[in-house]
Image 1 (tube, rainbow, N blue to C red):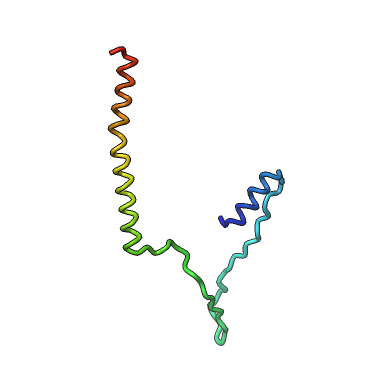
Image 2: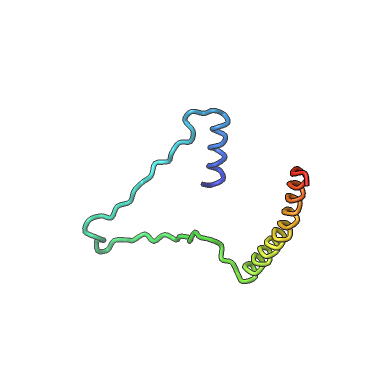
Length: 95
């Protein structure tokens, strides 16, 4: 969903419009029976491929470094958190 379409939808919800956004009429293309006639001009359209961004090896390496960093941070924070939980449980248990 594009940014402008989302904005129109949100503004319609905020303003309480009942009809919301108008849906555009779609046109379905069908192939004519019998194929292409001789001496017929065929319209060729340019198109862009829509897909994910191609990532280089440096981008993937950086993502790996960041992932290892956060795994290490979480790994170093879990044992102290367990010690604190154990101390709190011992305090309330009366030991």
